[in-house]
Length: 564
Image (cartoon, rainbow, N blue to C red; front, side, top):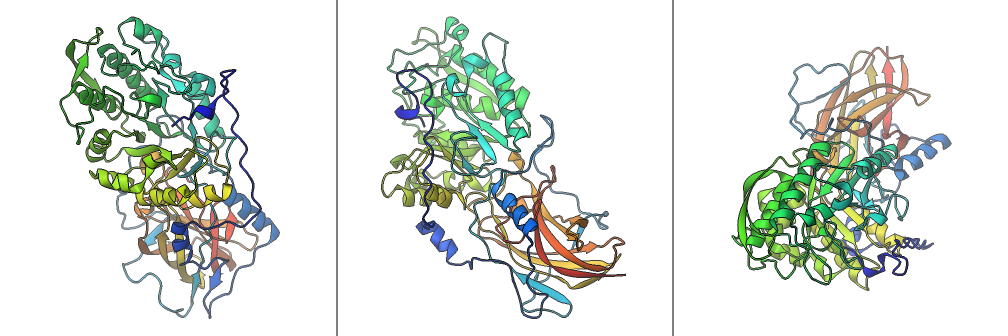
């Protein structure tokens, strides 16, 4: 949601975002993170009595750990349109192929004590902010913001801000200029990030201008004589040509692995689905028969796909008619539905399209309080179970707003916190952003102390998702566990990928997992067992809240002696 201070009123150019304040004081815990932190013993790896003892970290490994925890996510090099199908359960295999881990029978994963020949490693969760894919902080831009980010959001309600608008991308009927979007996604991919964005048909204060192509206006789209000059979204011409544009957008970018999500747009100031004087607010379920309710459903179905007949208003602004439509929509790319105060539309989308996420552009205001979303019902507060939730911070927060914001983020299962105006307090941003999305933590991992070359090594772990949401394969995050053995020089000499639906692990759940890995013909000697969480299609390993990083997404567990 834009605010009047976002641009230089005299020049019309975007004002640079202020640099975030850097405070030298220790971080303070907001109430909701205090409850989580109270259950954790912060620090380094701990090992139970009778096991091999804690691992030591040399200077090179410490440097790798710092890089592993603080930099942006690993890259994605998959070409557009590939590598992003919806997740399907993998087929079961009786005999796992080489390089995979075989799940063991469903028995207690980690014994209460240390069994003979077994090392049980107990970990402590750190409070580190992890810039993992598909979650966390999103700055004003890539280069302006307090924290690392893995998913950039291209804001900008006006093209001078670098945002995407209908008029610029569609200068003539059937003519499209995708250069700005392609450049943005290429820049994101080069940094190892994903991109997310909205295409605007309407700006708001302080810009006060629509973004409808002039050729569409010439053909009958109505720009209303309001203070903002807002289009009449009910207009036949507007819906016809905006729908054709969205069809073309989907044809080009649906399934592009560089895209984390796209906002459903086309209605309201900043296309945030804010109500206007023509909005039918007497439509609690979003399924009413008014022209406005029909319009809003059609605008959504342009993105999600669907066929139907919309009620429309003709070019004279008075006469009514109908418009038959059919849209393929985005079938692989994650969509997010903005909420700007129209309960009916949010209820209809949440209850009809569970794969569509939720976005609110008013964190730190009265329009983003958890109680209101709970009162909406219709599954709005459960959207996070199947699709990501995004909040935009309108800052700086007034006194007391931080606690309310924390409750909202946690209660809604948020995955992203996007800054519109840079919040001054980096500590607050870190506290709010750290628990967002998934956060996989192994409290205990048990493994054999010895294994024969060509033999089997059993591994059992207790894992939890301590974040506020789950991971979403539709955004490209389809995770499983992976293991490796490193030799005395730290080089990985063997690795295995398990078959666990990690992306389905919900917040607060505990998962006991058991795997067996078959060792190749390794040289005898001491090795280090490593663990990681890997994205299936890319092979990238994510960051875990552990202090045992060995670099490249691997984390040390225990020593294993390989025998001939």
